Length: 186
Image 1: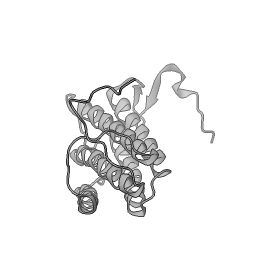
Image 2 (image 1 turned 180 degrees about the vertical axis):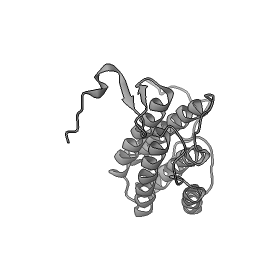
Image 3 (image 1 turned 45 degrees about the vertical axis):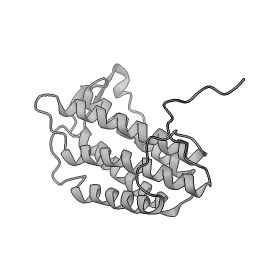
């Protein structure tokens, strides 16, 4: 079987159960953005130094594929693809990371080193995936699994916490948002 089928050349695709839909459909946008988020998490993994960060990101990538699969189905799956336990696993990692670097101190600039910047890009794409899934969930007769929404929400928090860990690992200081920032002298 070839990777290309030519079936989507007309702007349609098929959901997991074979139901044809437009590639512009909210469901396709949602699972497509989850796929994009997964790719950005993978890009971040290529730059992280901390093994605990890499481990939870790898787990997250596996579950992002589950999220995508759950959204690509036109009905509830036979068994849950994302569970409350998956969300708890992210929360445990966030708590562990915050135990290492301290709690939330404010918004930070997404910079400092490559790993930090990549983690923040992944975080923002996960947030967009979450918004796409919420949009889908607002449609009449929608069947978006609440655990998928919770997982995406918590994953963006995890990526923020992971960026803080990587900042420390790189010896980079976090730059907190300064509402009163002034331009540098030219």
